[in-house]
Length: 117
Image (cartoon, rainbow, N blue to C red):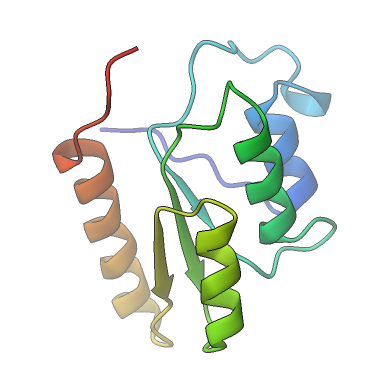
């Protein structure tokens, strides 16, 4: 079973990924297998989190799945331009959303092949 960490806003996500703030004691060698990122996060947007991740060698290769309610083509294009690996529109119904997240997790953690190193 893989541990799921939930960041409540973009700033907390950055703190977790880069072992800062409340996560300063986190082991920096233990990086997430995948990040599921909402674009509409408080404090720091998902776009900003994605920019930070792709600009840093420690997080550059972590797969990022954008999960969003946005149906704007511009958001999808921008997500891919910033380095997202996948873009998924959230289902409105919670059970469908939970199922989609579970399926995405299975793919990225168990099936996706990552480069060694």
